[in-house]
Length: 271
Length: 271
Image (cartoon, rainbow over all chains, first blue to last red; front, top):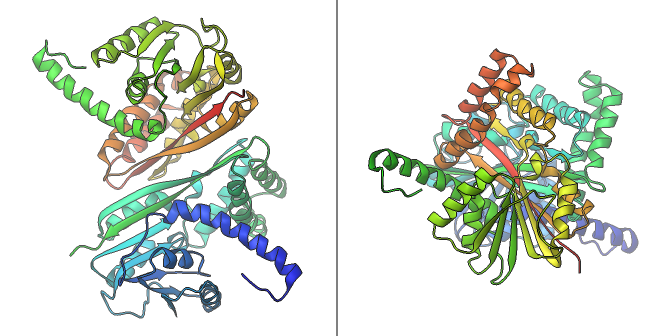
């Protein structure tokens, strides 16, 4: 992120990165403020991606030792780079699938998983796999979104339609974009004790520009990303798509509002 | 609520009242914890109903002087009774419509309004009426629900349908059950400054029995209340209705979850 070698372009880039980090930090505070691990504890971060959460996790628990795994070598490379740039030293990385984790049973004191389950064809099975490498008495934490929670003004049938396209496409690919509401049953079905789920609601209006930017750059951009597939598969026609996207942007302008709820769940492996 | 005169029946009734109060108090904490007024301030509670919020308000600001108004004489009678039973002395009551308030301009330091705007045909006009009796520099607070925020597991088309019936019926009666998301534009359109809106999300699963009871006794009971009208007007057929209500109850049982978001807004009348 800090690159002093190309002054002009990276001057702008730095500001952009700073702005994006600021957005991420507002959301991060909401999602992560109550997650920290005691010094000396061994924590698995499953599906770390490019390390967006890794940095936050590692900073909040400087005495804990993190092992962050991801299935993608490319993502791991970016995550490593990011973490080393930030001067963080309590994280090691490994390439692995959450259902074939290269660790002995009961290796970890805690497990942390963010935005993974929505993509898995059998989230319960994956949770059970992760559970085996958790020591008895250890905790597991999940954070997931739920696209069914998107609520906005002005309301728009077409805007809901384009979001539904994303939900349907994710379902066709074996995932579940409405999984936030299911964390309770997934964790209890997996046999965790003391399961506690809490909603984390993000709300954006003109008085919260960092959040309206987040709605545009994170949520709407994500929906826009499936345009081709959605239209190719006949989930929506061009006209509806365009109106839906326009209406979503409209919720971030003028008197518009946008609201979205994440769910965070923690549970304990019984002794 | 405490009536020592009819021991048996009121024994049960007391327990029931206590349970309902407990529920109300969990929700009340979420909605009201950040509302208190300084000693000596004069506060209008508009549309106090039977005084459910009045008690909470008056207790949190024992030094403030409340004037609670409602259009219904019957509700005011109940509110007065409730408040006097609780030993609260800093509230006076008056029968009045929010658009014909019997007070001189700039009479009040603060105004508090809970679950009113959703029922009004012209909420913006009503807000402007209330604004006239607020002194410059004074604050106004609104709390409203938004039925579009209802999100549950197991998901059910029919459950959404019966909620939509309530939304549609309220719209036909001139109200708006989706008004929570509109507080931002209503308050800015009314010319308030420093408008701040925050979502307040309630979430229920088996580990939170006081909330699942709340979902049943408050939300589902409210939906059930419109069955006759909804069917008489042809908004829904009998079979869909029954499945929808059954599916709503199902979200409060076993592995079910239910989530609902209220919105709270505050603003200031400019000096």
